[in-house]
Image 1 (cartoon, rainbow, N blue to C red):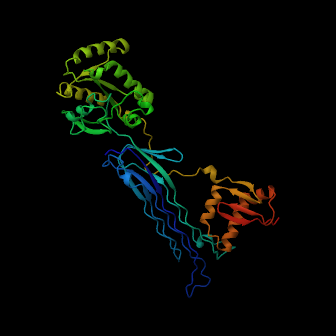
Image 2: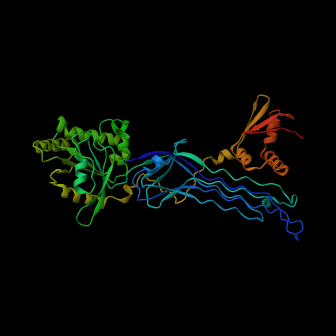
Image 3: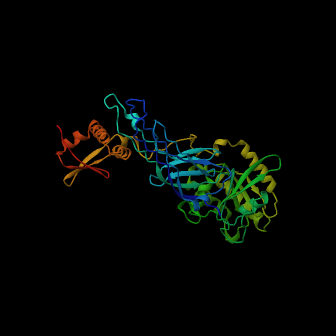
Length: 434
């Protein structure tokens, strides 16, 4: 089964907590704080593996969670960092954030990798908070939460050649006779429901990858028929080989079919209209094909000029070898950039933040019933990292709010002693000391 789309959940590891500890050696007077920092949580990394061809693995395994960092230790010992979780994906995988619909990465090259969810930083131990004014702080931070997100994976087949055309024009038959691929072949439409790949040996030392793509029909750019399930894969190909049934089976008009297929490609993406295309007249072993080809050629010349047409019979293999030579020759002159023209360059390790930097430096305050509500991503993250069970930690938190201007804003809105102030799930009483 070919699976080319999947939705998964990823959760990076939380950072380990810092601890409060003090040196208590027998002969060390006033040893001071010795609480170590927690280790960093593991990140979720997607890495391209050419051994994979589909997203089948993600059909059964949809949740990925990395380990959290180890807590800090006494004697200023740092907790161990958790190992990153490597998730293997096939080349051609597009990674998107489901919530923001942001395109995170386009992974195409062997070994290419990206950090999709970053592990949380370890919390600092109390040894990091010692100052001349407070030589024995009882402050330690909790580990930062690892990023989590719902991710959509979409696979676009990477192939040198893409076979396009209406259903039952002979695409699968051609692939089966020029490669070792064994696509399904039958006397009814849409026998190919997913892309089939085959390596084609031209016979002169050259080779290329050919993809037999699901049959296209009118309205495919709007999702009709196999619609986008087909069109997303043709974007990757360097050359389009357009197969036309010259026997005019089922009363079809070859020229009309050619126009409709090209129109669908153009409506889906204007770049596909500029992609090099080879026109192949197939089923030339049928009685009416020679006459239909003559009419088709005349119509093509009248409307578009003298365009090359290669006549073959995939069934009898007549003209197939000449077609392979023509494809290989055109591939030699097509720049490599054509294949990856829609693939942005991605750093080996790139971190995508869930919050914008601007959100972290702003806060808002508004009234709610008899109290006030403070909304701020930065402050909420600070609360999660703070261990507010010690007097030192509470005083430090209050100083930070004062320095950010939160106290001044509350006074401006008329806050009085004893009124409740809520930040996320945390509530405290406002105290105005002037």
